Image (cartoon, rainbow, N blue to C red; front, side):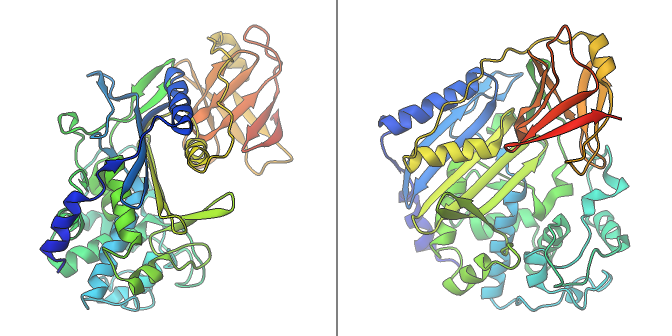
Amino acid sequence: MRTLLTSLTLIFLFVTASSQDSPKWERLNSYFKLLEDNNKFMGGIAIYKGENRLYEYYTGLSSVKEEKHANYQTRYRIGSVTKMFTATMIFQLIEEGRLTLDTKLSEFYPQITNSRKITISDLLNHRSGLHEYTSGEHFVDVKGKSWHKGELMSVIVNFPIDFEPGEKAKYSNTNYLLLGFIIERLTNESYSIQLNNSISKPYILTATQYGGTINTTMHEAQSYVYRNRQWEQIPQTDMSLARGAGAIIANARDLNVFAQLLFQQRIINEVSLDSLVAMNDGVGRGVFKYPYRNKYSLGHNGNVDGFQSHLSYFPDDSVSISVLGNGMNYPLNAILTTALDAYYEYDYELPEFSNRQVDMPIEILERIEGNYLSDEYPEVISLVLKEGQLYAQTAGHTAYPLTTFENGSFRFEPVGIELKFEGDKHSIVMGAFVLYQRGAAFNFVKQ
C-alpha cells in the first residue's frame, strides 16, 4: 500500500515553472506558432526536469465545433502510452507478491494457445507470439462498437500464433490487452478503478483516467484530420476495444509527473524499474529506447483515431517530455526533435511553408489514379480517388488523404510523405512520381 504521507507531499511538487521568456523558449514559441498558423499541429507539449516544469505550449482547438482552445487542462487520448501505465501496475502487483515475471499465462487463461509457455515477462516485452487482435475482420468498420471481454477473448483464442514464445520480439497489442485483464483478475477491480487506486489517486494525477466517450465539457479533446483545407473530426474508437493496451486519457503535465515519479523509483522500486527498462531485442517491458543525438530516452509512442502522443524520460538528465496531438498535419518526430533541440540548445531551422495549396482539377486526379511500382521500394502504392479526394495506400494499410500543393506535390504531412509529379496543377506529367520519405527518394512508375 502506498502511504498517504507520500501521496500528500506530492501535492506540493511539480508546480514550479521556469521562465519561458529566455531566447531559446521564445524561438520554440515561434516554431509552434508557425505550425499553428499553417494548420500543421493542434495539441500540447510539456518539458520537465525533475520537479520543475521548464516549458509548455498549447496550440489549436480541442473542439473545432465549440471553438475551444487547447490549454494545460486539455486531456487527450494517449493510445499506446497506456502501456507504460499497464506495465507499472503489473510491477506493483509483482512487488505485492501476487505474481512474478515467470508466472505463466495458463494460470489465468489456459484456453489460449501456448499459454503454458507464455510468461508475464513475454507479454510485457512482446515476446509471446500472440497475434495482433485488432488485425482481424472483426474490427473492420466497427471500432465504435462496445466490446465485451468475452468477445475479445474469443477473437484471441481463435487466432493462430505468430511464433513460439521467447523466440523474438514482435509488437502486439494482444499482450497488453491480456495484461490489463490479468490486473482485473488479481485485484477484483476494473482496470479503470485499479488505475485510479494505484496511480492516479495516490500520485495526484487528476487528469489521468480510463477513457470513455469523449466529453468536451471535461476538457477532453476531439481528434481531427486536415483535409480539404479544414480540420475534419475523426470518429471515435470505443475504449472497450483498447483497454490496457491504449485506453487512458491524460494531459501533458500529468504525463511528465508520471514519468518523473516512475523513473525516480517512487511508484515502483529499483529492482522493478531495472527490470522494466531492460531491453531485449530493442524492447523493454512497457518502454522503448529512443535515440536523440548522443543521448537516449525511455518511453512510448501512441496513436489512436488521429491522436498522436509521445512520453519519454532522459535518465542521464532527469528530463522528461510529453507531446500530445489531436490534429497532426506534420510529423510528430519532427516536433519532438525540435523541442529537444531547443532544450539542449542545438541550432535548428524554422520550417518553410511557402508552397501554396492548390485545388487540382478532378480530371487530372482521375488520370493520376492507379497502381505505381518501384524497383527501389518493396510495396506497390495505389492512388485512389474517393469523392474528389485523392488517397495513397499500400496493401493492408490505411489509406492516407493527400493534400495538393503547387508544382505537382501531393503530401501526407503527418508522417512526412511527399509524392512529387513533374509539372503543376494545370499540366501534370502523368505516369511517374518520386516518393520522398525520411530523407530518401524512390522513383515510381504507373503499372
